[in-house]
View 1 (cartoon, rainbow, N blue to C red):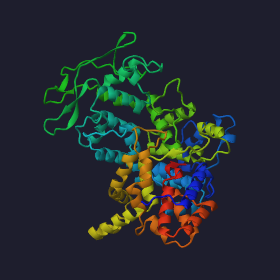
View 2 (view 1 turned 90 degrees about the vertical axis):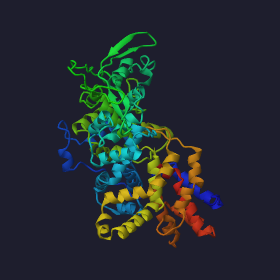
View 3 (view 1 turned 45 degrees about the horizontal axis):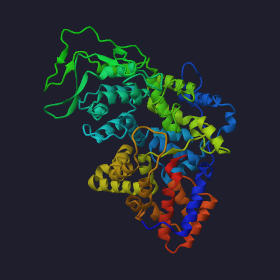
View 4 (view 1 turned 60 degrees about the vertical axis):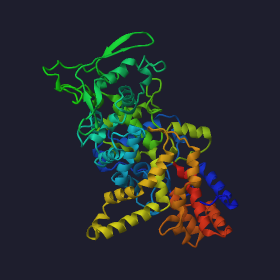
Length: 583
């Protein structure tokens, strides 16, 4: 990439940075009305209320903060909403064509229609694959279960809208033996079934409590986290062990029929013993021993299979209706995914002295999620339909005002793009994804001329073909931008990431003019006004302001090499804070 230090580009970038300080103030289509509940939605409402869940959420959010109306940002503009919805639900920005189509649509129900369209798309299943891979495996490298198998299992689960309690049951009961469910065993196997590590991660990921400091004693700083809580979870797992199958050489789980869990506090020397239990729920004592303790008795080349398995009781106890912590944890995580911050922060440190910011909202979400049988797609739809989700990120005045509004969920919160969102959005913005898809269609037409006409209209085929073709590009970006694993709501940037955007070969390749990519399209536009519009709609999913159009015009007319100028401006938007965040 040429050195990007043209004097006029400095002014162009300066204008861009100024506009990013309040991104919701950029012009675009006027915001639409928040969709109201349809007849179909009304039929699925709680029996105890005539108000839809998304309206009930908004009522609770408004009532929780005095003078909420004075703090609240207006409804987001259509361009702000379309970008937000695509990123949150489908994992990428819309194409310029998709943005223009949405902005031109004057129907009152277009936001609801877009939400439903995106939730039904193959891109949504892949988006959740990324989200839950990050949440459950925390970008942990593991050799026992290939990442591709695990991610495919996740994607197919979300494509089929598998209920969350069923997905968790499959993960917590998987032993790696059943080939169909072997990918689900990654949670255990790629942690080497280190019982202490697995115990801690089950508490954090599935219950929202980090019990690491309760392993040797009651937590010194959090009164709610007790040593018996840690060992109650550990007791489900303590009898199980990692076993290498002598024929396949694959790692699987075996289990013994005996072994009690005892613990001693290093502070008080107090001793304890516990049956398996989840936090403060009742213990699950072993049944009376059967005449035969084993289906297969453990030996050097024999995987132990007890008649009664403690480990299999964990899933039952975890997803039980009386385990409120389980469903409060996941709805808090899904809220954070959509809103930019959890009702409880940090997401895995929930306790009495760190209560939810809006406890009634958390209780409502958990109760309704249970009533709707842990339907993740349904809950994400309800969250997307809220006025809370659809508010602009622009607040009237003052940094203090913005901080209060953000805490009250009275405005849209800035959310950094995940590495996968950033990669896909870059490929969509630059037109690389479109060119690649065209190439995939052409290859299919050549290889299977009779089937091509039908196959190329199959949305699932298109999504999978494009993902396979662009995987090397995606992996490069993720490797550079992925930080410490686990679902996060904060933002950290590194020098290496900045260098990737400034002089990285991938970015240079994306901006190189070739038929169909953005820089090629821009070069064919004679009018600087048309050029500015195509640039901004393609990269930022919005129309440029008059000042931005003037800056583009001035820069293009001030340089002798128009092609280089176009690449420079495209790079400036791709590397801008406005592109890096979801507003």
